[in-house]
Length: 164
Length: 121
Image (cartoon, rainbow over all chains, first blue to last red; front, side):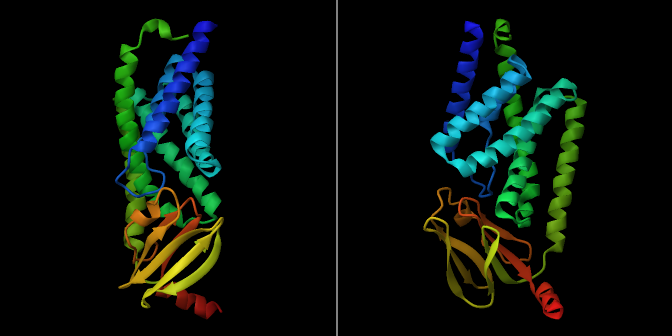
């Protein structure tokens, strides 16, 4: 129990830190919604270490924590839409064993952006924003792939007794 | 990467390409800019007239839209991320400038549509 709690705490803290780091990195592409997705690295690894339920809790905790600390209610809405959609599809493709860890990360990156843009269309009551859809898909592939490669490397080096 | 990963990547990039081509080929010479704040039309401005429009939004926020040389561009804004300011100036139909924090959208429309609207009216 103590071990489980400390692993959860560690992962939430790491995700929180990554969200902060992410807010410091300027992205040279001025399209709303594009970001590196460093925090998704933690969600991805949690999915492998803790399973679906644990990873979901960690993702929601991270979004709420970093949302209230660094941005605000509006941003939380976008993050939740992107986070929940991408989580659902990542968990599904892991359960069905469709893709490798890199593929699952790409699914996460792409559908995070899809979820966000759909939420933005709802909030703005406007579909003109889908002008960016193509760019967001490509950006999701690139960032998802990068995060996936890093995730794969880290997962291989994690101590085996970390998994519960 | 597994074979499935590559297939999935191909499908997603294919969809992105289709979307990109659709927007690329449906682009026409734009003639006016429609400004919407929180889903409501704030104003429509011809791209031929040089002018600066201050777009107010909730809580004393604003975006300054400048129309010059047939282009629309947001030059200044009160939003924290300034993504709208960094977006390239726009000219062709379908192109948009978006400011998510202020819920402001500037969309370019082409003449054809407005004349159709004229007939409908």
